Image 1: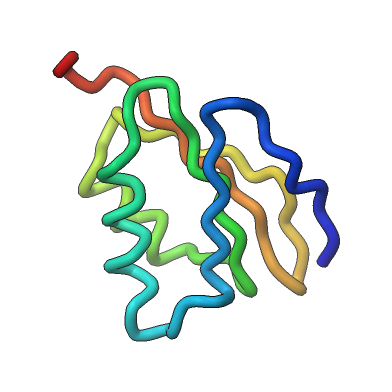
Image 2: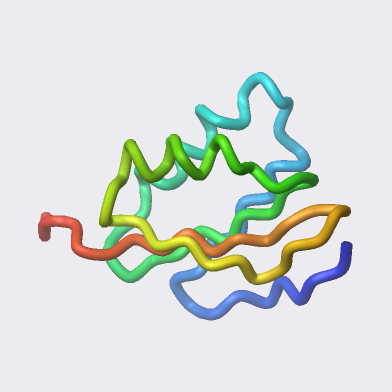
Length: 88
């Protein structure tokens, strides 16, 4: 899978392929929870994480946007954007 990973400002790359499978979901939730309004996590994975998407929707609801940047059998790149959080 090849993808241009030169992210824009406020886009943070999270390559899940280097995280042990048993820790992935916890690491992903932690990374998403650390984002602020207007920030995006560019998520790279070796498979399409359909069950994870449901869990993210349950946990973050309307505060997360999901945009597939690349969707192939070899892997996916998804932008998770954070919007509408209460100001700190």
